[in-house]
Length: 290
Length: 138
Image (cartoon, rainbow over all chains, first blue to last red; front, top):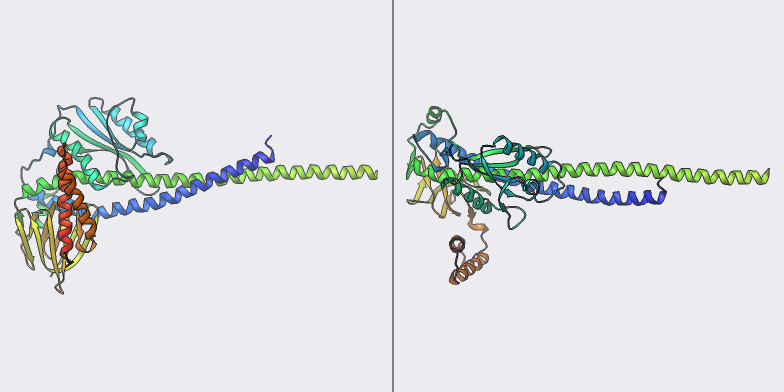
């Protein structure tokens, strides 16, 4: 049976763990706020970009871009997995790993090359898949330009016909409490299917395109593609911090629970020791009197 | 009178700035947008957007590639990056230019490196140009 000294030691070490987990929780909360801010700053841009794309798409007929080309023959594909570099974030990497495995299993006919951002999922599946590039960044959080470079690298292989499809797997941010692992196809993509007539009706003006609608689409489509990849990365970052915050909160709660139980146990033991001692003293005195 | 929005992936540079005139660099030259301009969607080129507000004050912003849409009484510019002249640190931009020029003077073997420093140089030059629009002395 544990003695009081051991229990004291355990309580002390649990208190130390509690300090660490609660500090990590605060750090993650601050990082999450920053990540959410980044998503919010991107939002007006993406909304306006999509709105403009839809209006331009409505007036162009038979427009084709390299990014639209469906090539069913080509069985090679790129998959970019966005995980984290650090652990202690609950099921964040585990759930992504599960979804990626399922995706690879469901698409056995495709020869998938897996590229990674973040090392955690890579460590889990590198022995089973065809590993491509592992992208790292100058600082912990990637800059927009760094994401553009990655996106360009992947799209270059697509436009040259080296691969037929490009996918991105990441944890999509829902709220600070939850995120969902998803695999999205980013290339080839198609124009948003809208009611063209309706858009045209809302555009009663003589709208001018300079130099031409097609040329504008040529610049907009790569931007839309990059924007999709960038959104995925920002989502993954926000999800990571959200998950870590929740995980650390639970850990802190568990620490408190353990501390409470251990303290109770220690107090009981101490009380038992006191009682035994008292009985000894009392019975000693009794025997003297007797 | 119309409203100007400049949006980038890194955030909103300006939203709802009321202006009476805007100069926008496009691939086919600079266009001057006044009230009642035709509705137009055009491709931007790297340069400086100058907006004159109602009091006649000039607001300058750098833009790189993207689009500019004039629709009704709103002008929205979508650019990969954009900076307002007020926020530019002239000394830092000059340092960056010096560094880029020095690097370019050295022998660079890979094309991507060369391209990288060329871009850095162009960016620094534009920032310096933008900073001077504030009326700073040389």
